[in-house]
Length: 459
Image 1 (cartoon, rainbow, N blue to C red):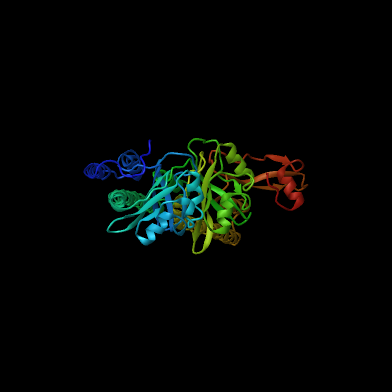
Image 2: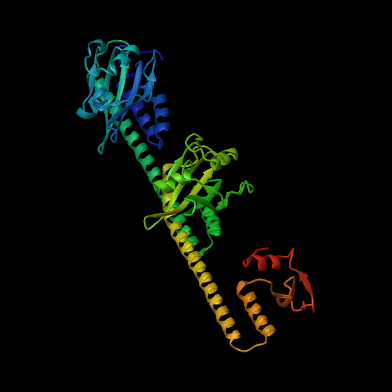
């Protein structure tokens, strides 16, 4: 644009205020800060002329000023996005003192040593910065710069402050709208995650089978944390490794993984298990995670993931993992949510492991009970004066029942001990009958080998 010197305000006073009113009405409708800046870029140069029009907004969390260039004619290096501490820039001084800052000759300005060299390189010879402040908060500063020395004073300075007040209201409205939008989005995220936790809890209390539980969790999780693979691993104390227990990988049913041993070293799951903390993988590195099963996953296209420990009463039982075919698929918030889910899932895993342990103990008890009953039955048969064949028949029937096999036989040798005869037989199929006077050689038979070694010879 063509700079008009020496004045910085365009038009007569009535025209200026009519233009200001039009700008106020226009920018007041913007709810998005970026859209507001684009509109200001188009409208402010109509009433304020200069080589540069800029806005610096205060970040109270970092206590910095971030520059937004609305108009600049001339060489760099002035550019949007410059961020400096409040005390190092003219806009910060204005924010703190809440009064205009006028510099009629930048070559004589000794303050702001970080920013002034850039101002000079941009060809600015003088500038004026006024506060961007509303009744509720201090937002930052609005500045104009000229390629010639210029004195900003009187009505001109008053008008610049009027412009800044209107712009400040528009900026505050945009910031408030952005905060409201972010708050609404956060509320929606919380609602979805709370609903997910409720669904996970329902799955935990209704599913005893861990494979089915994983499928239920994966289906619920997809709505909040999209993923391609979900997996359970349970610690195997006998091998001091994790063992793949359940896998949900719909797009690659041939991948396997169930029953595979997963080392505690060189795997995300091993790291999560040993550290008892979530492990977030933005981009899979085979240098950091070098185990063969990880290489197999990489070959299948897996690129990022998150593994969390399953903790119950301070003890790690295993891990829960989600994996993606895309890089950077999971965030820190996803890892936190997955960790909370892992805590719930650990309850189900502990219950299942306790149930399986109780069932194994029950089976062992019943086996020992049946064996004792068999010994008692044999002892009773021996004292009941049964015929030998009847005694042996009762004994083999009890053996087949306790050992849960299909066939039990007793073979007795002839007097020369060269042949064996099947003396009694107990078989599940009653149509089979014992052949009469059928003998078989001792040599070359399983029964003969048992007789010769006085031991057991499994077939």
